Length: 160
Image (tube, rainbow, N blue to C red):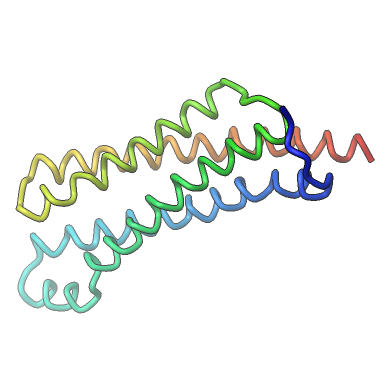
């Protein structure tokens, strides 16, 4: 079954996912920075702590994390949907599997928040470890995603 969309929509819809994911990658790096600044508050001396608290790093980290979680889940689903609409199937490969894994890592990382708020250091360490893995996987996804995007552009230009 194929979805009847105008050809121009089918062509241009293929670029929404990669653009969104590059924006999310940049925001993920910023969220990582905010989280590390928030973590510094716990061990900072009084005058430095006072200055860090004014930056509201923890609050901004939580807000951005919530936005990232929802947008990554939706972006993953949109990417899969567009691929299916344009090809009639999903391509079971490393890019798809790693992307699904990233979505799971982000959801698990966010789910640790209530434990961290209660002061559980194991949850904080696990949260950081998951997010370091997520950033690494995200970087690899950016490279493989650009390879896929280049193939799509080549196919579009070859059809013209």
